[in-house]
Length: 174
Image (cartoon, rainbow, N blue to C red; front, side):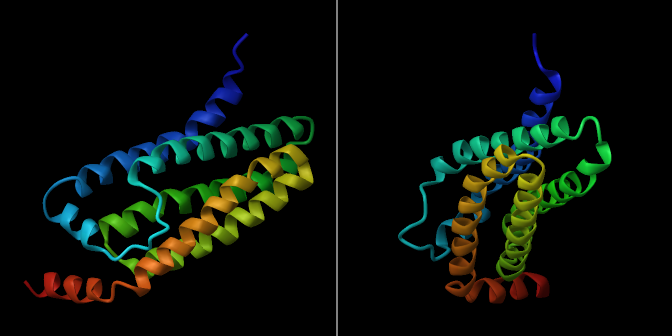
């Protein structure tokens, strides 16, 4: 029998990430926005573009399943799920917000600040999940590791591309 609650918990985080990714992937694959992204100075340790979609699919699925485990663990005492699942929802919204900030606004500094806050919120989520269900907390460990990598990458791109602010300022005056 299909467990629709578990399936929905896995699908939900993927939908937001997928929608944002598709929208902005289209923007960076053509025209001026493609040139903008391609011309950013990126570190030698950046993952290839094709690795990001599968990585995020696995990560979103694991954090979604972790949220299901917390929900199930708290079925008899739903008030126990309020803090962990609220933290989860908040960090998920922060996660989905990074792509529009980076690719849409092209605000590298704000993107770094945002992903730093996201990393803190995800860490709090993992800790609160672990208090409810150890497996749920552990399912967030790969996500936290990836966020550490993504935060480092965001910092590198921000610090090594000071010309982006100048380009944005020039666009505002036109």
